[in-house]
Image (cartoon, rainbow, N blue to C red; front, side, top):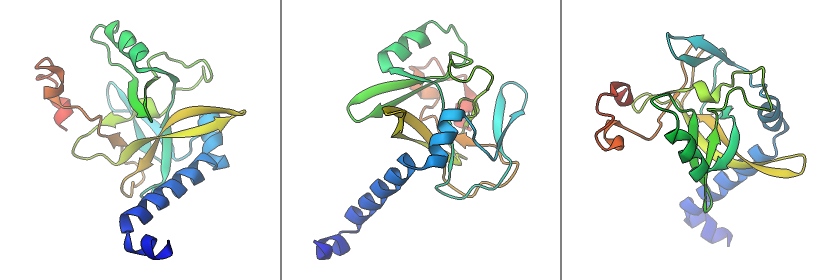
Length: 187
């Protein structure tokens, strides 16, 4: 078995990724940050509408930066909410967890669990060319109940005062021609 692992670098990388995810899922600091929305090293900054998120400390590659916070609902429930937005910006994050299609509803603001906080994840802007954080899904346990959470990790070294951005995974052609005037998607 050890011989096979040493020959199969991809398998070893997969095991490393699983071990890192398990470490994250059991990390008391990350669990507290998600539960209390107590993320450090971040600030909201007004760039003209809308607000964005900047680093107030240096983040290194693979550091967990924050979560995309909101109620986790089914993807079909998320699509129904999106249909009722009428040209408003939608703070909905669609993702898959195993076979489940889910959505984090950050459109409902403030959230029920943190009514006094404007959470960071919903304010991270798009960039397909200069993304410096990347979302990923993991399962965390709070009070004995498992919850799907979308966390952002740093892709590169992020210096102080740098705006956080991630690739939303869409472009102007993603909207059947309706988004061709949305030039910001090409940034």
